[in-house]
Length: 90
Image (tube, rainbow, N blue to C red):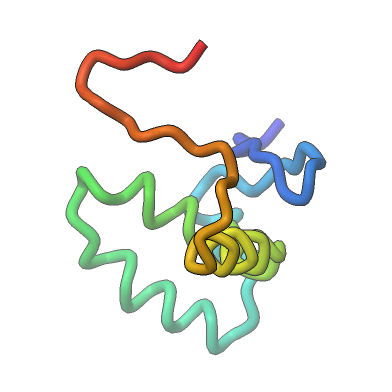
């Protein structure tokens, strides 16, 4: 079984490819070339975040984020809380 990443998009659990090769295999030639150019220069500490960002391409996750950020920009209270050192989410 190949490694996968799991996240929630639009309220549904979604499994994403979890290896560099599997993420790259989901892309068309143009995206794959861009991925190759970028990924080999990502600092090791930032690699997990970069791979997740690429794995999410085409899932609609960014649209969900865009809607949320638009709501925040309009001043809507979305129930978010400020993260402070030592605070925990229950």
